[in-house]
Image (cartoon, rainbow, N blue to C red):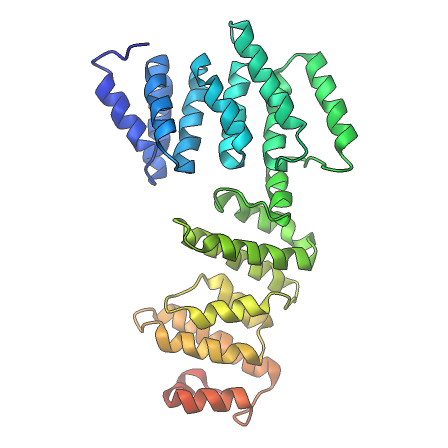
Amino acid sequence: MVIKASAAPEIRALVATLGETDEVRRETAIARLAVIGSRAVERVLAAYAATENREARVAMLRVLESIGDRRGLPVARAALREGGDVGVAAAGVLRALLDSPHAHVAADALDGLVSAALDVSATRHVRQAAAEALGDAAPDVRTRVMTALARDAASAPLAQDAAEAQWKDALDGRLPDSPKALRGAVASYAANAPLTSLQKLVDAIRARESGASDREDWLALRGAVHQALAIRGSRVALYDLRETVAATSAPLPISFLGALQAVGDASCLEPIAAALHRVPETEPWWRSQAASAFRAIVKRERLTRRHRALKRILDRWPGSASTLRAD
């Protein structure tokens, strides 16, 4: 379909906005493109093919879902197989096409969703999204899919909802595209998760951080997992806390310091002192909290100046005694 000249510049600008990091602008663009409707589809599809940015692709799929145009079918089926947040968004596009007036489009959308829901090699999050999308399918199809899912439950059970599905995927080492969705899951499920699973999650998140454009968000998520471990009194991932603090030259999320204050031991003292030496004095609140964590460890472990860790610190940073009060 040819884009009308009067609408083309606006559509072009709105589609470009889908790739921006400003969530408010992106959500506004999604809503506006949905109103413009089918005239925007070709531009959205072209932009989708031209970008590897997964957040932008998710936004574009949401536009296609809102419009419900059959031209989005091939992209949605491919995206569903791709998995992750893109796959979840693709399930929404296919759901919107289940009642397409074009019989072959509706049939292909249904086939894609059924295949994804029953694919035990896919992540629970995507399977969950596909199964939920089939809520709009014919009753006999829903019954067939649910029967098959129940039969497969022993090997690859679905979760009760999307949040639990993402959490279980993460514990299996299959992290989502964005860390934001897991923050709530940590608060909801970490209290009952096996400690060794949380340790592996810490390692997986740390690996994902490297080179990630949203590294700060992944770092905050890792801190939240550390805090959940500390609440349970576990030191299974203390090595990661210690190494992270030792390497930092900028304030870390406060969850790291809270975890150190709760479960840190003498081996954490030198990394904290090193961080205090490197983090600039223009961050007084963070430095104060780090010093408090240091003192809490000294008090809990009943350490004196004669302890080798404190002796090394005072030898290396003589001026730290007044800040850390390690006597």
